[in-house]
Image (spheres, rainbow, N blue to C red):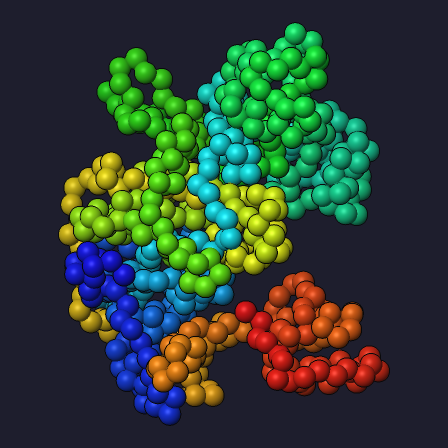
Length: 590
């Protein structure tokens, strides 16, 4: 923890929390007295916060325990904020809210952890929250990098270049996003043979046929991108440099996305001998949610500007005679200068233990708000800038929040990493929550959408003075609403039950030196509905598990089935299979 932050924001930082195992019930009773006794209200009926947070107040939780006790409220407000945002902008596809396991793991892992909750001044109901921490990486090899294909940045800069060249925003000539029609109707409207559409989309949508009815927002391929995205005008005399000039696309990014296609190497003046360059890297593109009207067939025209006003471009307000930036343009580290500064920052630590900590880079960890989110984040960033210890702020943005962070001043930056024990393996796009020894990074989704801001150069705007309460306000109760806390006391600790088969407990773990106090750590478990099958033997034994309220079963090593004796016995009885296991070797699924 930096001394600058500790001295300036002591009330907002976590205190070290330890306890003796026999005293857990007394500990939880004392902890519960620090927060309102219950949170009995319906998140759907919580009043939206004002843009400037007038009528609201901030509360800075003192430690992880207070964040944990509010976990049910955090989940409810996060879900509701996602719903209201999607409804207001008619986003397609609809963004998914943050999973409870992700929120719990961030509260557990982020160190130091500080932040604020926004509560309605009169009702005490939660209206939003933000957490901050020191940026930490856990991959065996990590590099800030906005030039490699793996980072996704060349593809993003090419997308910007196409928009600047006049390509309409939200319209892809090679695909069609449905709004109630069937596949045959799409074929007729776009002048494509329906059998060809079936062939183009059968791998994306198994079972699709000419009579298929399609859900709203389904993206149908109209042509094969592997062919349609090649430079159709390539000549034998062309080089990457001449192609870049003719297509008005950035040369370095064309080289990055095509390097693997030319075994002999590819440089700016390499003769192409008629082999066309790929002009678009769809595999690395990010499909940001945009307004439904834009998906339906064309960019929504911007509202008329008041007389005498000019639309702001990426460098500020457009001056006299300057054209406004095209709709859909993303704020990127176009010249890689911000990424270069991040790469120069001090870091220390072990990725296999407590992670590599970047001492001058702060991270916005969790954020959700029912209004006033921009004011909340600006307030947090102004505190960082004022205190002076952190030079940069970064975030792993959800795709629905990219525009929000851009308006504050963040730009997308790139990073790549190598995972697992083989450090000579291939580099891949950085996944922020993949562990150092992770072997299946694809399970962590696409490359993280990392965004960064140089606090030293950031124009913070007028200083924000928001009311920060020393204590939590009383929460007005709705007798008809359930308690959002969802807490129960079992096995010597409190547990939060999400209602969708996930249970989060804050348990004491004694993993320090002999004689040291145990540390509180969050433990995330998933409820088993049934075991469907098994494969392998010995150490390679795996079970196919169906989880409560999760749509798809997963194959799990036998070591993940802690406390599942009944499910294993039930499976053995149903399958007629003799299943043996060692209880002492079970490991909880995390």
